[in-house]
Length: 236
Length: 153
Image 1 (cartoon, rainbow over the protein chains, first blue to last red):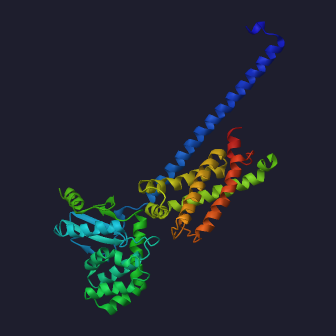
Image 2 (cartoon, each protein chain N blue to C red):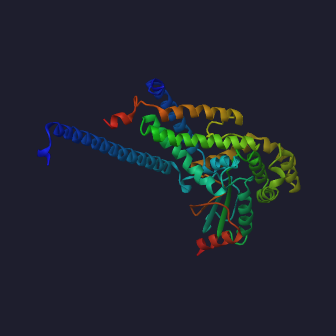
Image 3 (cartoon, rainbow over the protein chains, first blue to last red):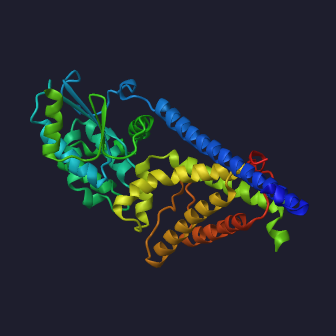
């Protein structure tokens, strides 16, 4: 067929074929580039995810300060470590039900320890509440104070300065109010809360409440039945 | 107009500026707990609850990946579309918050690493200003100092 073409037509055909091959060459290069870029993006994402996972410490590697409020025997069969925020509504639901459920088990069955993770950017009084609870802990009334803070969350979370309210709670539990008032202003108490917070960040905790049960991470609130089922599954 | 759209220095400046801006913004958001960023998104009261956390997880990656690609000069048109839509979503979010009178403690623009502490009006103006180089990049007619140019050689 090509033989029947005139010289001019053959020249035109060759030019066309050359142009077509250039187009397919560009398309090929484009495809290669796209594959290369997509592989690059996946590689970068994988590297970031792996580096973050490596840098995230394991709960076992975080040594407890010993100051954290706790109930039960540290060698109990189920060890629950909670990271919570007194001003977070989900923490309220979960903490109150867990506090109730824990009492149903013996000290050798469940060990429960509370750690602060106040998200102050969104919960303006959460750190102050955590400090107040630490002060109650110094006078061995942490759990009563913990329950009161959660139960009366709506009563202090919007206050400009909840100091007086926190002292009033302390008085209600017959704590030494002078000692309590000094304690909530002390840098040392603030440091205890910050220590818990930094610990939580090292554990890559993203939200409250977060629990570690025998080293396994559980995120989010649970009701009483949820807690019972979970604890029982560890005791089986 | 062609001269303006083909200005290689303006193209390079816009690309580096927007690329670094989004790359930085993505990294800072990734450095904070997802829940904190999710709560900052919640402040805007715009997204349905079910979408807040997925958005808080995906947005920093989008900023990081497309900011990085733009910085390198790969897929500039696609990057400008994605980052343009992202910026548009910020503009819509902040505008509706202003109209509805929602008090924002912080815009959440750079996670908690930098608390911009600006008024919503200032954030809106800044976002609109950032939109200009993005639109320019979409219509630009040069590939000056782009990795794309070398990959397609």
